[in-house]
Image 1 (cartoon, helix red, strand yellow):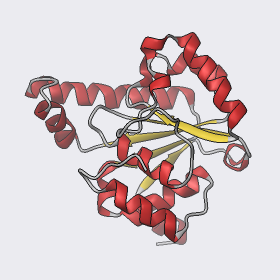
Image 2: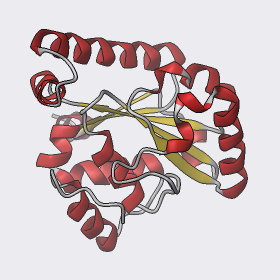
Image 3: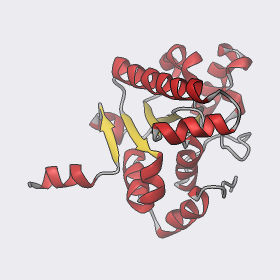
Image 4: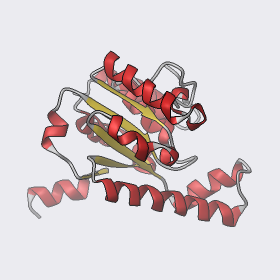
Length: 207
């Protein structure tokens, strides 16, 4: 097994359509999305722990209220313009941004996607436990959202990191290290300490 194959086997995440110019650019925008009950909050906690601004009105789930579709696309575009002016590097989390993300692409500066995936059974059980859907509908909803996310990524071919929620929990340091590299952030022991405190199930915090 050569070095490249060994790295591939040990990897906890998967990069798609990586672009050196995008990776090294001083201005980068990260969008975290995935499926309902699929671990996007934990991944957002990683970016927040790495020092990447994710908005001010995020609540415990780190979901930026300024990016909710009910505000209208025009208001979201204005939010993007303000964030671009305020930060060279920033991001936001929205598990199911499919209602507006395609229309927003022309306004995003060097966008880099982070797509969170979760085991089908666990994801469907999470939906079912909340009463969002019955068992069959939960399974179908999880599969549909995952397929839609993959189709979007393959169609637009922007730099993308696929992150497994299960890998993040089981191999936290390795997964966080790979996320940090994708984000162009040098991870420190203090970053890792804060992230470890956040990502444990049931312990999500806003700081």
